[in-house]
Image (cartoon, rainbow, N blue to C red; front, side, top):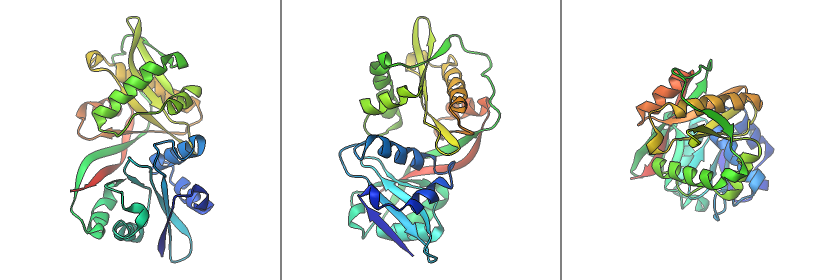
Length: 279
């Protein structure tokens, strides 16, 4: 049983990708990050080289993977317990993981990894993964209408996505290439009212059976008018139209307002993830 790590994406075996793809809901973030690296190259998330890791069990079968795209946390997919334990030890011994200060992982794995890591840790963010059951229209319906974002909206998209990242303490800002890529398939929707955009929602390309909504952003001056619900409803419909059978999203558990909005639209909880950091 062993972890293998590499900065060469070609070294990652096809069986590792198959192991990740076998869990399209729980591995939604990992799948979309891999997709971005394949489409836009190894610098899709910054200048640092991504680190790929895959776990091979005692039976010789690859059973899970991790991915680090600095400055973002090390991202863990669905893993066997023994793989989580071994990864905790590898964080202190593997040269390619020396820069890891935070991890994004399932809550059920957090205690196991923290104990194996052997260094003080703290939870800095708690996230809940939701799956859309039966989509329900927002009530009351917000004023305005939705439209797909176009390349003419790139400056607005860049500004709003950067503001979203700052509010959510997400490092960096989206690149122009990433914005153009999502605009190319209709992956950003704008809610308009009063002559201009008042809210934004995006969705990722369906991978396997699933598409994930995000980001969802309303500027502070436009909040509490139902625009986020309206544009999220529209983005969910667009994700289905793009071929998704599962529509997913994450919420910050510290924000009861957004959690309530998504439940009223028909989203149901699946599992929780946490962002774990060195204390």
